[in-house]
Image (cartoon, rainbow, N blue to C red; front, side, top):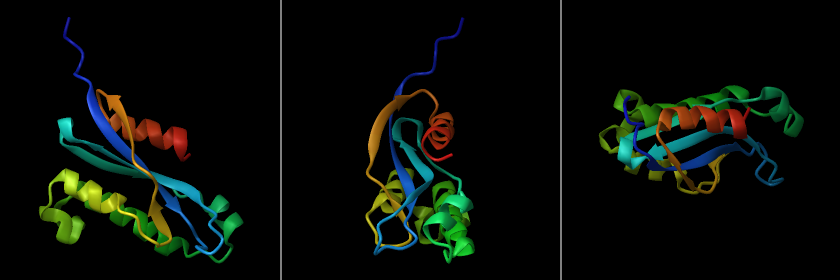
Length: 130
């Protein structure tokens, strides 16, 4: 019998879409997960356009999707990450969770324990976004 994978501390933040900043209404559209012990940073996104249109019928859906895909690209690294490509996973995560006043915003950072950070990202997306 093989021993279970070790537990690692991980951090996560929700990605929120705030289509009209002045109103402060938001929907969850993704999750960022960082696990230093597993050298993992990843994003999972899902944009519910019906919910978004309920908040703002004029929302720029293609622009919001592009912003969410850009976050996923930064997490993956490589050429898609642009200037962040050379940064290690932790720096990319910290850059992505820095407060900003754009339509796609990170929420507060939370922590937990996991054996599989990629599976944790999928679980959090299903639990908190979908």
